[in-house]
Image (cartoon, rainbow, N blue to C red; front, side, top):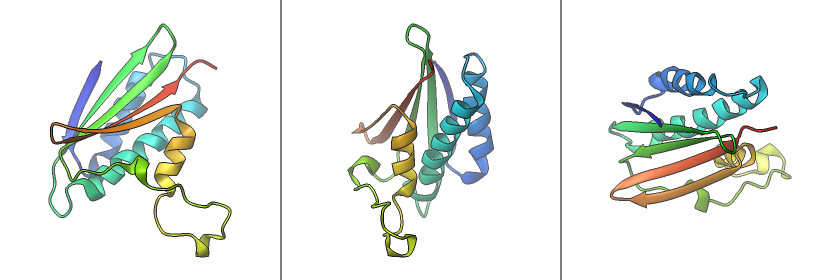
Length: 137
């Protein structure tokens, strides 16, 4: 397992994405799948950066584990910000025209669609959000 701890700031997004992509280089992950994983990582990290500690700042710990037996990537985001479970929010009604939809929620909806598994826990004063993507075709 590899870990990266950074200040939860959008200025560190490229550092986080490079960290993830470096781990994915050890797999047979397709470019399309890497783009999907990067999109999910970006959505989650930017949400942590913008909302977890607002108006203050804090850090985010990102853990990455690549499993070989059934190829998958597990990415866990941990922060000590305000407790927030994004999975409890109702999915947006994407059948409505954009001007009729409530603002927000589309990003985590996209993450749910892209990733195979996503789960949240609040333990020991920390938000822990884990996303998993199977790497086998």
